[in-house]
Image 1: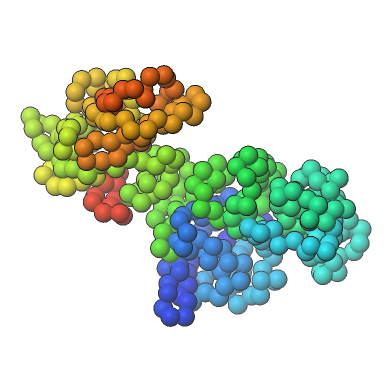
Image 2: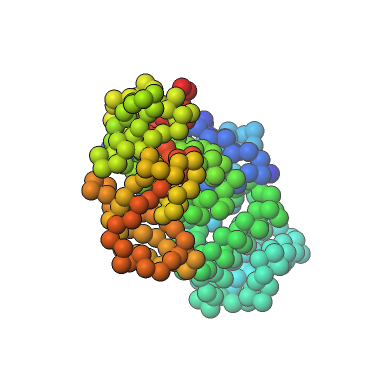
Amino acid sequence: MAEVLLENVTKVYPGGVTAVCDLTLHVKDREFIVLVGPSGCGKSTTLRMVAGLEEISQGTIRIGNRVVNDVPPKDRDIAMVFQNYALYPHMSAYKNMAFALKLRRFPREEIDRRVRQAAGILGIEDLLARKPKALSGGQRQRVAVGRAIVRQPRAFLFDEPLSNLDAKLRAEMRAELKRLHLQLQTTTLYVTHDQEEAMTLGDRIVVMKDGRVHQCDAPLEAYHKPVNRFVAGFIGMPPMNFFNGRLLAQDNRVYFDEGTARIRLLPEQAERLRGWVGREVVLGVRPEAMHIRAEGRFRGEENLLTVQVNVVEPLGEKMDLYASTARHPVIVRVDAQAGLESVPRIPLHLDMRKVHVFEPGDLGVNLILGDP
C-alpha cells in the first residue's frame, strides 16, 4: 500500500486552458478519497495525471516515497478502472483479468491463483469463460475491477466506473466497491460527478470547481459545514435552497429579511454576523430543514416562511414540494401526507440550528463558520 501526494499540481493545455490549478492533496495510506464536482472541474484530469496518462505542467506527484512525475504509467504500480470498462472483446473474462500479469511474465500458477482469488472476491467464478459481449454491464464492471485487483497495486484509480450502469445496479455496485475497500484496504482515488456516490463511498470527499479544490473533508462535514455557497449547493439532493436578503438589527436581535418574511437568527449566529448587519447576504436552508409543523427553538412567526405550492412529488415515505415565495423558488422534503396538492399556500418553519448564511456570489464563504 502507499500514500499518494499531490503538491501544487497544475495542468495547462495548449492554448492556455488551465484544467487544474495549484492542487495539493494528501491521500493517506489505505484511504478512500473521492474527487467530485461538475463536468469540466478537473477531477478526471487530476486522476489521469496521477496515473501518468497526462503530463503535469508544474508541481510534484508522489506515490509512496517516490516522485513519479517522469515515471511511465506501467511503472507507477497503480491500477486504473475506466468508465467504459476497457475490456478486450476477443478475450474471456479470465484472460482479460490475467493479461497484465502475463505481460509481466508471472508464473502460470500464480496468475491462476490471483485470477481465481479475485473472481471469488467479486462473485464471478462462473463467468470466467465468457467474453465481454456475453456479460451484463455489472458483470463487465466486476471483471474490470478484478483485472485491477489481480495486480495487487499500491493504489486503485477509478474514473467514473459506475456511470454507464442503471440506477439499481449502480447502487449495488457502490455497496460492492465499499465492501471491497474494507476487505482489501488499498489506497483508492475515485472520480465521480455523482455527489450521492461521493457521500456513500469516500472517507473524505474533494469538491472541485474550475480546476480548484473548494473543500476536502469527511462527507458529513462537507454536508453540514460547507465552506462556501458552491459546496453547499453541490452537495445534497435535493440541493440547498438559497434566499437573497439583508441582515437587520432590532431590539438587540438580528434578523434575515427575505423581502416577504423576516427570520430571527439564533443568538450565537447573530453574534457571528454582527459585522454584516445592514448588508446583503444569502440564507441557505436544506430541504429537510423546513417543516410544515413547528419544530425546534422558535414556534412563533419569527422562523416562518410562507410559500406557494406548485408541484408535489411523492417519493414513498417522503415527498418533495416544489414551491416558491414571491422572490425565490423553494424545494422542501417532508413526510408523505395527503392533501398538500390542494393547499395553495403553506407556512414552513425553519430549523434555525441548520441554516447557513453566505456572502453574496456563487463562491460566497459561509459566514456562520467564521470567527465572530
